[in-house]
Image (cartoon, rainbow, N blue to C red; front, side, top):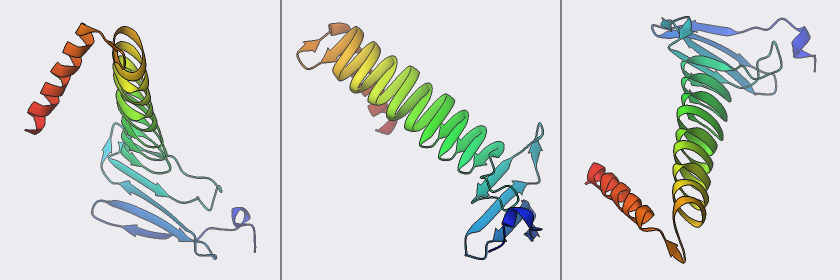
Length: 176
């Protein structure tokens, strides 16, 4: 099989009302696809989507846009295996405001490893309010916790109990 990086790449390009698709199918059936919206916001496409390995570089293309979706994504809202943005969702999620993922960081975050500023929920969690098996914060609800006000088996700080009951009531009010 020839080295694709040394060959001229034939893309199937399709211009739609919303944006442009660029696609390539490898001889072995693997696919590469990229979509970039026509609408730009401060030089970034409103939506940028990538899939597969680029035949020109042999690497994944980083999706960069207001909404970015791809294996590696950077945007205001980023969705990918590795995602970074104001809101990030992915296995590795670096969110400024919100991070959701296996390993997540952000002002508010939920993940197996949740490194939060204001709120963290996960097996291992940090944040001003931290909920987890192991947690570190100001108000902590955990199996094993460290902080100013901890509610854990064998120890129930009254301020922590009041804080988490108020949090439960606030969440219940949202859904009921």
